[in-house]
Length: 466
Image (cartoon, rainbow, N blue to C red; front, side):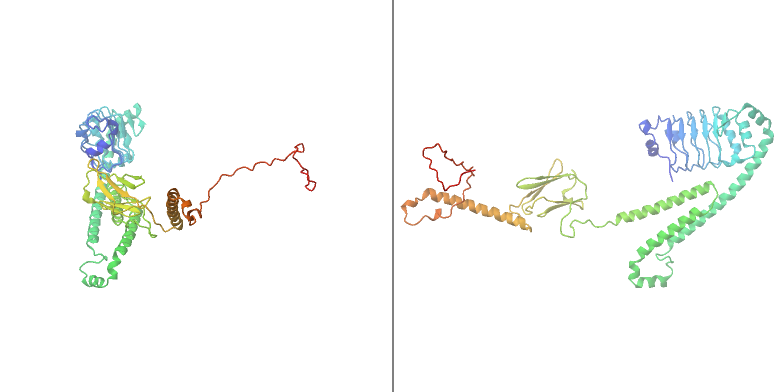
């Protein structure tokens, strides 16, 4: 059920910067409000008030709204027009689709001299005989009734027939009041029966039987199988019962009365609470967070949803976590592995796969005293050994290159220090020489001597050049 609170008015007063004492227009429609209160104390300057489609059963606490010009109370549970004498500036009143059966209560509107428009369609009184003539004769200041303008001839005729119309209206009012009294008694009795049934259901055992049935309870407690399955069975049976009750409620015919409107609202609230309970149960039972996949690979997880930055240098990897400044350090747990780092923050895991292999033993974690950030420094491993063949070959070739470089250096040193001409044994160092890559040169064109050259000798055996 809804209530008129200060927070509700402020939330609907955004156009006035949430200031309520100087508010001139307020809309509180479709808020399930049952009682009209507090508005005349908090919003004295109101000129327009929208309260349609609620559950207000009585017009009250509006007499101090002296500046109110338009009041909309359509689609409520109002049965009588009252307590509007203090609204001196009231010019328009909308009471469409209510339960007003006392048509004579419109006489209280005679004090509202500025009232020009009145809407009563959809009320039981609107179906009375001579309804319009009675209203026209009772409220001389009115110009529009149910959206239809009043003509001077209509008013004169209504005043002439008023003495005959009034007793007829009174009789119709009495009949309506008797019917309403019967309907209220039936609704009250039905409500009491429903409350008793709910109490019985709430006192029933988990298997739907009374706890006084000792034999049934003992037999159900003997086997463990029955203890493990009742939660699922109860959940399914509850779902079925709720769906059946819901269908039965909406398919059941009923009269359009204030009690039926309240009953539908209570039923909707009950369904809403049941859904909230089910959603809470689903939220509580969360599946465990998977940090390592089935194939053994670590996953990236950021359950605390905090910002971070990762710096990858030649020597080390630095992870900066934006941990909350005033969080106690005892709530943080750091675990550094060769390929990933895991940080538990208030029981929520933060895990990050590292781009290179690190040394967990020589890693360090520090926290900033100014920002509260957690800085984790992880030095890299020099030679990474992995399972792939390509990586193994590449490491081997680099080691071979380093050995070759040392050998060449030693060779050059021997050549500088030792003179091979002073020794009789052959120079072994020059046996295996490195292949020197000489740049390719273009072949020089052969010079063909001409016949005019005096040194030229012609050989007849050589064929001539084409």
